[in-house]
Length: 275
Image (cartoon, rainbow, N blue to C red; front, side):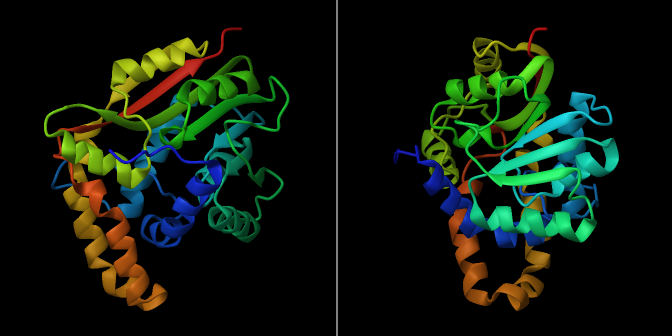
């Protein structure tokens, strides 16, 4: 497999190329979707927002708590936490395109007093120890060149008793490895842990795991519903971005769909830094 390890600047460019159209299709959130079954008629942005609610709900946020959104994307998730939980959210991303989109969203919603978006690498955060009550990493740890170091840094900036919630892809079947390799190369994944391995990484970083789930069949297993929803909007999106950009977006994501539905899982983990 091609070496998927990349520098923060390379990962930033990776998302710079993908974020604008992804933002348009998913309503400001670049992470995965969640459909209950094939008859679920929820629009794509709502299916994506289900993941937002499902992952952030495990944090049990209270008004005024300080939250780090590590890999904040175009900012909609951080704004959701501020709007619905009264949290004070700092979002970091290595994508210039995402940073601009997130700041524009904050200005347009009037939530600038509660959210602060910055260019930053979660492997080397510019915050003192114990700066946050909670940390969110929604499909952002997947690109860490050193997953243990990344989780250790999130552990460092959490106060004692603080919580972390993360979601990401997992390996469910090693059969037909060439399919998985295409998936990993496309997403620039250095590793693709199983659920037990994700839990081991969290514990090795010093966290106490409190809750976890594997919901791959309703996430990656519904990739066909995503493709249908995206194709229904293809003409509209091409009218906004141009046919060439849409074709390039499709090309960049082709390998994502290579695995069988049962090969790629989706894990959600909530853990706590001991008090």
